[in-house]
Image (cartoon, rainbow, N blue to C red; front, side, top):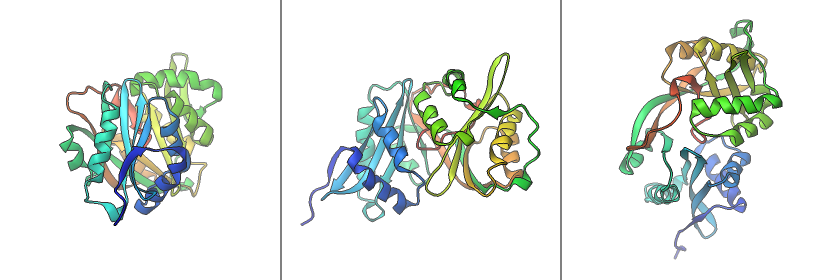
Length: 284
């Protein structure tokens, strides 16, 4: 007789089990991504295990005014047994005091989230490309490399646009991939910024925050054109056709769509129209 599955909090020692689930599902995360959930205040991961084997996970991350659910993973051999519902219920219980709870849902996961009271807000598309420098225009705009000393001003602007404090996350992205950290500023302040991070299968560019599509294009051109040959994913809210047209023109193709959802009645913070790319479904 098999042992009874047990539900508990993930520890650092369980990251290897989470990585196994990522690889089994073709996901892109690295060990550092799991550590962010475990190390961030008020955040964590719940898991279901049997006989020492991790069968499923659900992570949650607090950005003060916003709580985020992610890493809803179930071993392919254990699906359709209700494990996802148990994990989601446990994550929501941990966030019972949160002002706003959101997540990004795949078409396969959306019915489960709707059963728990989540409603759709807007759609996103994952675009992906192998960077081809020849397809980019000459970067002539004012975008520049971000410096460590810029982070305070960038994070202050991000709290306004994202609507919550994710300074810890952006500082981690800056450290892991400084080549993806670009910005535009002038005497009036920060007009835009990009971050990125490496993954198991590809780099992720995001967030991309800008006052307009032209600023987003300028930063993306400066950032990506020197990184010839690298594979990048950019997860784009379907809110600005001009920006999406630019990405298509430099070789990014649609891979899949998903939907941003929030618990019914929760008013999410921030200014979505200024968010040209998200961090990825794991981190909003």
